[in-house]
Length: 171
Image (tube, rainbow, N blue to C red; front, side, top):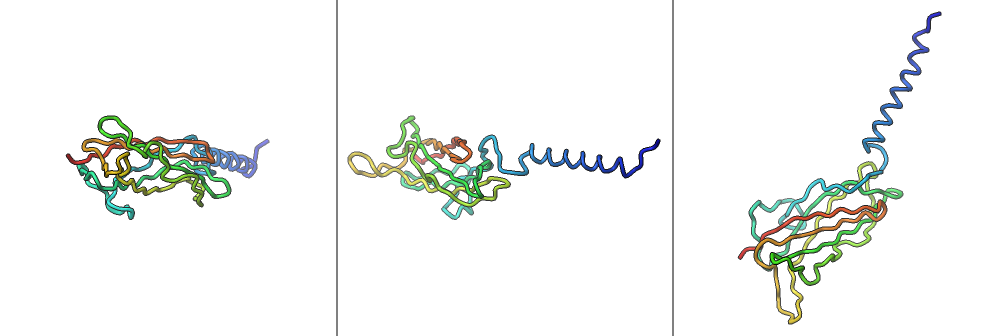
């Protein structure tokens, strides 16, 4: 007895279809399940428009704001919305944390719509140079290499990403 072509094709199409769907689910192309947040890009930029990147080797002035732009992937959505927070800590060249810049919220519990298929959010933040100290005189950034630590939180996905970068302040 010989099996007809039609009887063989139907199960093969079904098996191939299952393999394709399984591969998409495992690679994260369908749904919004991510194991962790990932940094796609980080740049120091000239202003809040984030169009022009700061040139490598640039030295900030003591009283110059720092603009950053970065993209994080892996946020999980609930009904097409994400909830996120971003906190910043900045350390001076001597290893001291600046007053009011110790795990300080830049964004806290912000909810927004998202494309649930990929879970990517682009951030542009302004970090204002320190001005508040006990005697109320301007402090500014300390000259040398300063470290920025950003803590990005995905509240719905219960995930966190720490990003560490440095910027140099002129002598």
